[in-house]
Image 1 (cartoon, rainbow, N blue to C red):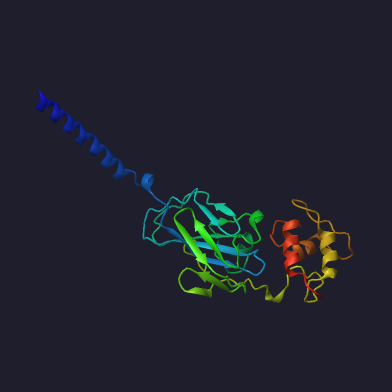
Image 2: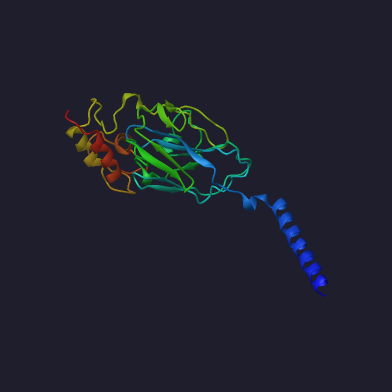
Length: 250
């Protein structure tokens, strides 16, 4: 009687084990991770409106698709970005590009996989030095980031010419130096002073409101070109903060 009971239990265990084994083989996506991605490269221009954060799958894992819901964050600024949606396909040694819309608009820029909202800019991460984290799985600690619009800070090799790469494998190098233009220099005289402030004041209409300037020869397009540093089609306190950083003696 006892032997028969034991044989029944062993048989039942074998059936359960076989079912679990079949489930693992038939549904690998259910068990896909997202923990072997590292923060690999960060980039910023001088005023912090053009930034990107590049992740890389570094473990050679083919099923590290579970990026959805993972949080990229800056320890210094406290800003966070939650990745929406998983990636598909073989993830082994792939890249994942998170960037601002201003970066995406640059000539030659690879298409970002996700866009950082305008409200998180300028300066998602601190260019003076920061720790950028990918969830609880990785932290990239770095010192001052080059802000000449050409160089970036890399996990391997330090300061190098920027080389952003997206998940599709599209790569490139951007020039965010601005060609010598100074943000906030409305009169084009090479400095940001009280003359420019008068134009800013005329353009300043607050968040989510298109500027309606009253000064002669100043248009809405001029306001946005001179002062809209976070590219959200308004002139508000975020843009005023950028203006302050460039304000100097004429």
